[in-house]
Image (cartoon, rainbow, N blue to C red; front, top):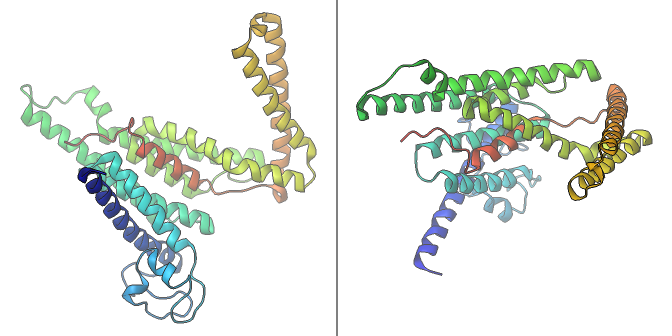
Amino acid sequence: MTSYDMFVLAIIAFVFIIGTIFGSFLNVVILRAFSGESIVLPPSKCPKCGNRLKWWHNIPILSYILLRGKCYFCHEKISIQYPIVEFITGVLFIFTFLRYGLQLETAFALAVVCMLVVLTVTDIKEKVVFDKHTYTLIAIGLIYNLIATGFIIWNQAFNTISGFQFTTEWCLNNPLTISILGMILGAVVMEIAARIGYLIAGQRAFGEGDTYIAAGLGAVMGWQNIILILILSVILQILFTFPLFIKNQIKQKHYSTVFSLLLFIIYAGVFYYINHATTLLDNRLLMIVGLVILFVLGIYTCITIIKGLKDKENLTVLPFGPALAIAGLLILLIPEIPLPLIF
């Protein structure tokens, strides 16, 4: 291993440690969002016995291991949430640093990462999304893109011969406009999708907090990326929900729903394979018959699922916020989708 490799590993380790420290702070933000206390005062304390923690009780991950997952004072179990959030935040800090390097974008990207971690944990923990967290995410997106737009104006005004040109095209395509449009689009699409739930199951498909999360992600990454985030989040939610949905339907002895869904999936897979790997469906009549069967199976499957969803006692509900947050993190950390360049 060369000295350069050692240096890179040292930097990555340093970033991870900083991330775990921030993760420890995020645990405080999460816990005190539920308790209503300030995130600054009082100092860290055991949520069970109320004793003020010593400095070595707050070392990320390590303290949990040394204390064997128990409070030093009352010996009550410490939630596994603490080291998990610290570790995940540290890992996300590494990915963010590797993605953006040492520049201004990194600070904003890390702020977005932190807020998405907080939103995800509160939603998983109690199915609650706090307005102050979503408003912070929206503010981060708007402020970042306002600064990005300001730098573009500055660079054009002082570093080009023609100077800054205020045109209609520029007004529609600058980072701030794209951010505002993304915020609006994210909120509108999520709210429409949520209200469709009234038609299917007599209740919102998603909570109001999810609308604000989508607005925040749109403000951060613009209207083009929010469309991709929403599509990806739906796919992730289906992957998360599908096993629980099948288990619930079997438990309730709704075998027709399970059978129709599995039949549709198998038939769709076979149809796709035959269409792309053989010439059998070059015959137009066979292609039409195959598509009709696929359509009928799809409609029947949708009807059986909707009938199951109308029965609220059998409704499988998972928070949608985590899927949105994970989709946002994936888009944020994919190299091919950069934030607007500031420098």
